[in-house]
Image (cartoon, rainbow, N blue to C red; front, side, top):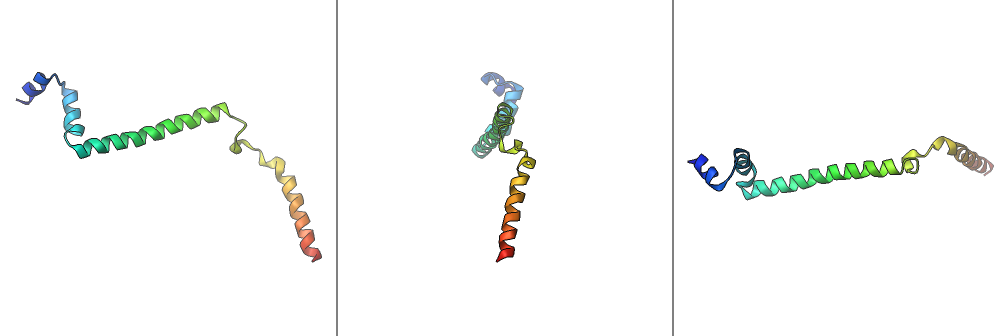
Amino acid sequence: AAARFSARRGLTTSNGQIYNTIMNSNAKYVLFIVTGAAVGEVVYGAIGDGIWRLNNRGKLYDDIDWSKWESLYKDEDEEEEEDEDEE
């Protein structure tokens, strides 16, 4: 009877399985949509970030070579230490 019901409605076996798994309960369907949206957003965000980093390579904060700036920080630290010693 179940096969005749799905054949009459034009549902294939895979569509019937999808219906029985996901859409036979409103709670399951909402959970599926919310979970799908969250996973989709993570994937979309990762792809977007990857494209952004690819197009802006060498211009981002992570790309800064901090060894070039060490001398500035060392000079400032030495001056502060000298000021503290004088007081």
